[in-house]
Length: 396
Image (cartoon, rainbow, N blue to C red):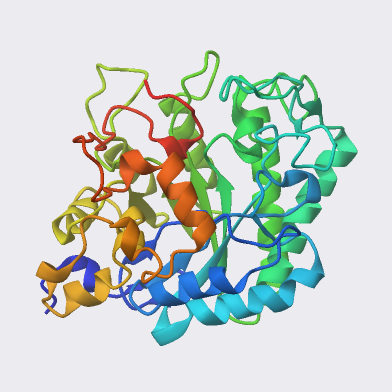
């Protein structure tokens, strides 16, 4: 009998099995080549963290050329990416770890300089409030929307061809799937917008097309996951009740639901009278229907089991697997005392953290990485505020 519940195995309804309930959360490396091809540094980074978690979800890959969000981002927008993605999937699948490719279209959360001069696109021509230098996007035409749905399907076909065990649709962090559901970014009056149900039309179409592609091309059980952010702070914008409604609408269509929050203890950011953790509220919706992945500030084994005790079926570990690639193995071997809880900048090469990612962590995420060189005590619990990785440039 395992000391911790998260070390027990797990089986999806489609028959896909995980050796434990630990998932490596998707985190960008900013290390792909200029055209989105996988780099050796990226492969080495994932290989160093493979073998422990039951499942690893990659940093996000864009499905359309106009869906790229930043330089160094992974691409799954063309068949030429398949050989590199195959190497990445192989590196992740060491010792039984399952490989899931996270895919998205960034929508309005990009810049014309990233898109080789093209204007960003979105559900409506409404600029994002964060960051403050956001560009005005072009409203997508019906034909362009239909093409992006096809692009998601083609990306999944490529993921299957490359040997991945699943894909995760990134509908969180204010990207295009979320933009269509949000009243802030979607002001359309056609079939793609208007009421809450009509704003669901695009994400549901992507999910349904994804399922059709999986049925057509996958010869073995293939996982379809969906990641969502529970709330927005814009007015108008997505509120927790909207996301719970969304989860209920898609729970029979996907293999898991993955929350995007920086603390699994997070309560509502918009309703301070609601003191029930968001994780628990989603667990009531997904219970007995679809597995729920809980995430956010999981560092100790006790944290991971607490996530499961609060209703999640799987637990995602992010920043701690950057600091300690052997986290699962050390817990399983009763070697918890050797687990890194802090990260020395001098150890990042040894930990196979790519050089570009090292700069990224220091410049953009120093407040959440527990660097040994930090002189100040940092409060990064994020139980009542956004973290830097959630799509907002400032916290509440």
